[in-house]
Length: 488
Image (tube, rainbow, N blue to C red; front, side, top):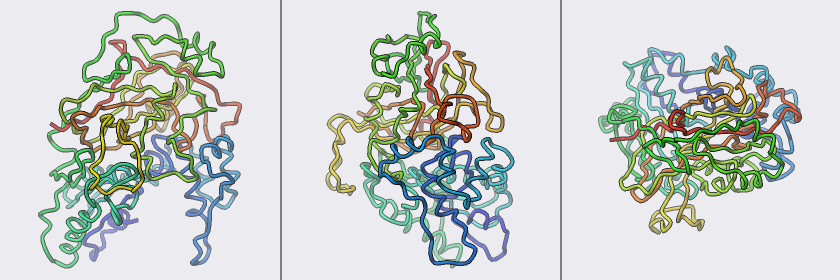
């Protein structure tokens, strides 16, 4: 709403601060990420928020009450996402309209605020959270669009280590991650208050507020830049090599694999683990079986509603699964600081006509790591030695790999590039830590299940869901990699 207000051009409007701006519900905010439906967020939020109120009321109302307090079990038992519409009923107009627009068509584009950020007159302070599960994407991309479309506007961005709205509360920690200080208080006193005092009251000075005011997790420091991404960033290829190795040097394979995915998928039984125990790894690719009836959970916890903390959760539980590929570097000899958008550039083949791809960027703590006891945390005891902290994760619905407007089926067993952008990162991987990448094809029930069949997923039936054999290549010619914007 604040973004749209800023576009009004009203002479009395001097300064605007869009905070966690909802920008595009198909590309990266709230309802979808790269075309994948974030069913759990949508279903817990919109039956209340979207409920019609013909007259003003003080009763916000209540949404759907799940009969069990295990969201993984509930959404799996509910079945295809079309069944959620039945549970919601007929009163939520937007929900049912959304089901009629499975691809990025004009209906979605008309709701994209970032395409019209021209000639913005008020001073703008864009605010978002690095770990905002709802609208991290919107904060980064609204700012970038405004910079491009309205370069004359005094536009600044603040990104702290926060969940959705945490900048108004306690900002010292999120889940098990500790940030060394009350980052929210710093923002309020040193950025937000001076900004509005200057533009609304003609008091003080805003020279201390940089173009980009970004908190870097890992090292736990605020940094100021005159542009974002910073000028001294170099894109560096982190290759996903054989043997679960991640390296800035790609591996070169000298062998040839002749067995097709089709051959292997025929041997798959319901006992996925036994299949993997008998398969020998190839030097040219890594493979897993994606089973939509046993999807990879987004977190280890059992709970009802989606947690805020999953954005920094420990990923060791996922590393133990046979349908998650894990690659990690050697122990770092120097700090590695990542500042900007991360690019996943996977070379894949699948045995079916569609699949999802999830890439997670993870900071692996040393085995003997402990936080300073003076750093404020959640108060819960947790084993931080060897912690695998999620820094950034993002999903890509495979059929949109070339176009969000015109989805394309995969040709089974054909090597194909799947490339997409993860929301910006501001994180330092400290000396003695490791970088880790995980690749998987479900993230449930955060994202809806892909039936792994090229179709309109909103119309999928139980019988449409099938297993898929997924290969990630690293054969010297076809080299899967993650492109990291490394600060020099």
